[in-house]
Length: 225
Image (cartoon, rainbow, N blue to C red):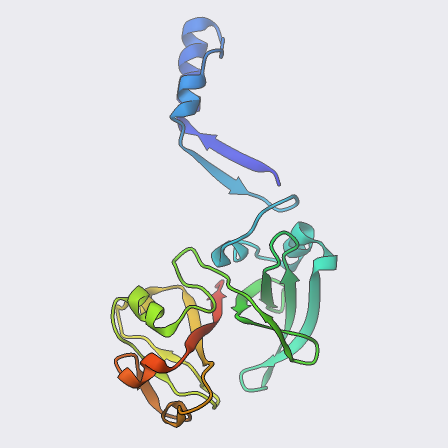
């Protein structure tokens, strides 16, 4: 990957030497030790994406193909909005770390949103593995409910499981979760003794019954526009 580095301190030092010593740039190691640089990543080369938000810097299908190669991407058409809208989806398997990220495209093949799932499915929609993908803001797939509560800094409400809006979070206004650009959904891994958590019900992390129930972040979603 080509990198453009803006080094303000280095530029200032170069200018000082240029005007005082006729352009001699030797002995600039002191400036290198104190430099603050900004690296702007461009498409078309090796990269090492690790955090969820980093994948959102890829804004077109062409860029995704150029960075990771067609051999690491599977494209399909899938239904959204309760089956009323079809979207083209590219599923990326990062060859460097195995992370699987889904890109949902708009009509111009620009990135509309990206998704990361805790469960990894095969072509028959059978779970074959799980993955933990971290975000720069501290969220991750597979994060437990009480860890999520601690991250949020307060209790929060969410929908029961086993229906259309299963695991949807109702974030309070001005809460950390509400301010996060990453949307999350929950899934319940416990299957016995949890009838109270099924269906069109509103749950709250303050409910002590949930302490013995395994609930995790099942997906991360980040909308680009």
